[in-house]
Image (tube, rainbow, N blue to C red; front, side):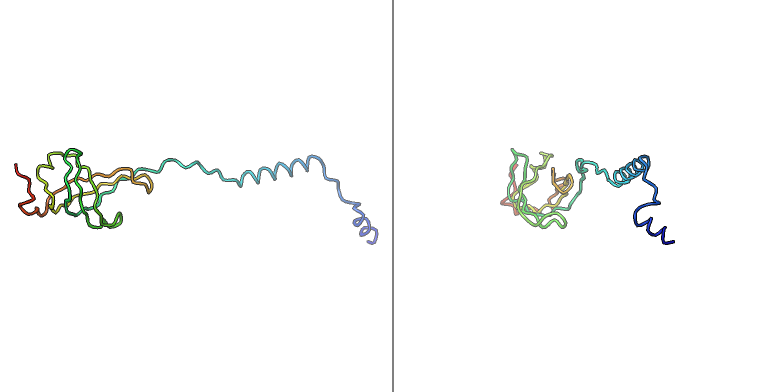
Length: 139
């Protein structure tokens, strides 16, 4: 027993690692480390989304030539605080029925890519309370 213990201390009795075993160990290590790597795809463009918000406000200015109305609107919950801003109106015939001071409501259609607003449009605008007669357009 004493001979075996001293032989082990000197490194005798152990098999020499073969070249094949060393190569196998390297291949196995390379396979494990490359298998753990995740491939993350590059970020693509964020999907475009469209959402409608109710808009209530008062007309402050009409820019018929530009196709815009400036509206002081109430807060749009989940989208923006109350403010005064211009809105494009596609239906130009609507301008004949609008006057500064009209209380209006409509739908603000907002197009986003991710969190970035790409476009917005005011649709279905109606006068819910007309301005006093002195502000009404004369036809």
